[in-house]
Amino acid sequence: MSLRPFRDIKRKITKVIKVGDVKIGGNNPISVQSMTNTLTTDVKATINQINSIQKEGADLVRVSCPDEESTQALKEIIKNVEIPIIADIHFHYKRAIEAAKNGAKCLRINPGNIGDKKKIHDVLGAAKDNGCSIRIGVNAGSLEKDILEKYKEPCPEALVESALRNIKILEDQDFFNFKISVKSSDVFLSISAYRQLSKVTDYPLHLGITEAGSFVSGSIKSSIGLGTLLLEGIGDTIRISLSDDPVQEVKIGNEILKSLNLRNRGVKIISCPSCARQGFEVIKTVKILEEKLSHITTPITLSIIGCVVNGPGEAAFTDIGITGGGKGSNMLYLSGAQCEKVLSKDIISKVVHEVEKKASELNKK
Ligand code: SF4
Image (cartoon, rainbow, N blue to C red; front, side, top):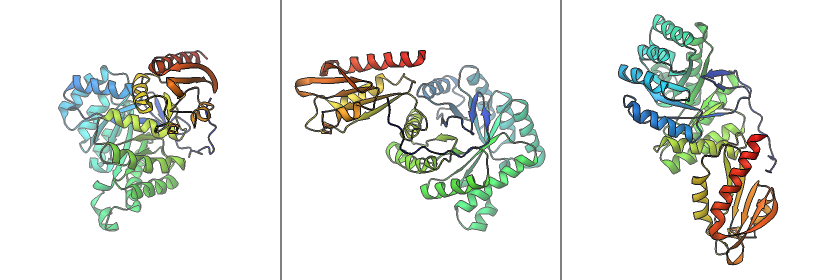
């Protein structure tokens, strides 16, 4: 059981593109992506990190390809992972061609950076031949010189003009399999740029606040920036940029989508901050449960509330609930109804058992 959203978000219906078997745009689920920070030439470390990112619930992973050794390594990496890989190219057209031939399912490259028409033609040819899409990634920190001169500073209009310029280059070459981002480290600038871009194009949008910062500040900035846009129905795929483990980026991305009921993957925990009334150690319990239930991908709601002040009310709208009681005697709720008393020492094992049982029941349906 879960609360009916008070307000359904009306998503803007964009064109649909594919990155491997992941559809982006239209009514498809908003995908979550992250990026490796290992040396791409360290194939083993990169494969391990990609697997960890995927295990956390990512749909796509981006890998940097700054040189030929990296695009060579990419071939080996792609053979050994199950998730579609996006090659981060930025400038050199040869790296883009190599990455497309070596199995990348998307290239992050701005056609305006590639150079002359022949090079652009060759990159797009390699992308088409290998079923590879493209992300135009406009960034406030690397706008074209003439656009920067025209607008004097990075502003929403400048980001959108750069995006439209890059879109035109691709469309002129009959290439339509792309998505676009207009990122900035400034929340206001990013929101305004994405809003304006969304009005003038139907291509899918990749949302992100770039260089958002450390785990705490970056997560907050991203939640405000991406949350605002997602609430307005803008955005088809997201990446949270943190100066932290990429696995954390996926965790935050999924939590943002869960908070907005845009994508309910895994266990959504509702828990109280705890206080002197708590019947068991709420904070410790939630931390352990988060870890122990991270393998569950089925959408399940779970309330962990320290006492009867709010416990029964929250449990009424969750699949599984625990409410703290006196003398370590706590109440387990299933589908909103009281079920049985649980001693504090048994809460973890009982909740894990019930969540796994519920997940298995739901998966059979
Ligand atoms: S639900 Fe109970 S234990 Fe939790 S914060 Fe509120 S009063 Fe305290």
